Length: 248
Ligand code: PEP
Image 1 (cartoon, protein in one colour):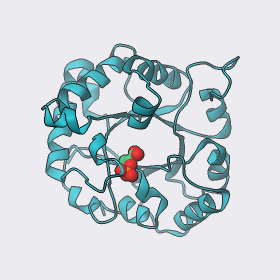
Image 2 (cartoon, protein in one colour):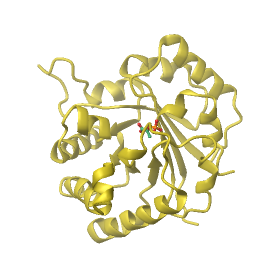
Image 3 (cartoon, rainbow, N blue to C red):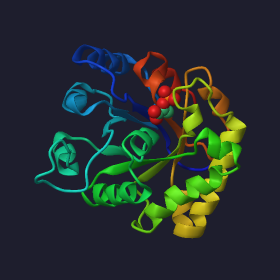
Image 4 (cartoon, rainbow, N blue to C red):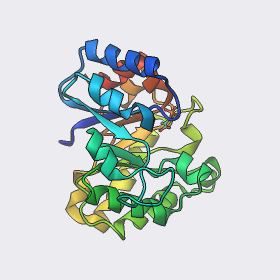
């Protein structure tokens, strides 16, 4: 078994309210969570400070769902990594398929964001993954490589990057990849990374994302290249704690 700390991210997406977010955090505060799992809660921007303030679990960090590529200035509506650091936020999700598809973020722009966020001291959860058409056309690995390559061109040190393989056909659909299929693509992703970033590839965590839930998470046990999960819908529910505990 590889020596990489298990990692579970919760991407709330554009969901929540002060009350709902408080409930999620207080339930986690009361939960008996394993001390060897890195958990990262990623609420919408307006609730980041609240989660930082209310979180009592030492193993839980807070992440944003996006950030911009400038420190400050005339960029109405954008959020600087500096602001996130100032709030006590440690992580940022970048390249999520919803940002790539709905907001037309290119591979290059995502890579620019990764570079800037890292330079500002944030850790990055970098999402990659193929559409159903790309999967059917046998292009899964090619898409992942292309999305990773854009970042490889801009970033040398991958120690603060966590990769999340999130097949788009599995996101929010209830159709998770099987643990065997995920392990096989994760292995290919790691093998590709080793050709472009060398030895560092063995320490990069590769998460699975796409309809992960309390029920299917334990089926990923023993899959050497699945280092955790990025969880959307289920991160808003009590079963999130079961996913965090799924390696016990
Ligand atoms: C996500 O949006 O990152 C995600 C994995 O969503 P879900 O778990 O709801 O499929």
